[in-house]
Image 1 (cartoon, rainbow, N blue to C red):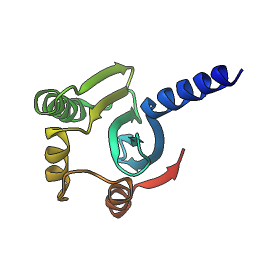
Image 2: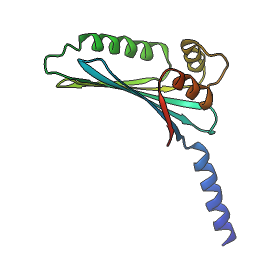
Image 3: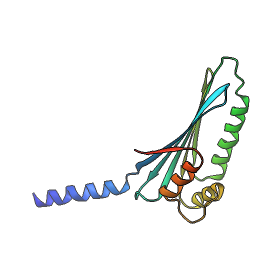
Length: 147
């Protein structure tokens, strides 16, 4: 019985250490008159202190049937190309349906990706802490909450 309990504890320990847990979700809601947008940034961490992965989501909704979203599409395509070309192992999805555009990107923050991302947002260091990034986002109008 003790061996079974020890084995069970070892399995829990090993599987628990490899799980990425969701830490924070930050959102920014805005309205441009002819369309509205929602930016959602989800921070994931393995250790509860430093970000190991980011999920970036943008949702745009046209206010009118004849709203021209070509500028939004062009901006999204530029960002999508940037993420996929400049970040290792980044993935991205784009969908559009009747005036609604959804764009999501998954950015693993390891190796060179961390350095590039920190450089882009104007921070320094070799890792990105949850607290530092949350402060950065809140200073730019985002609202963050624990998940």
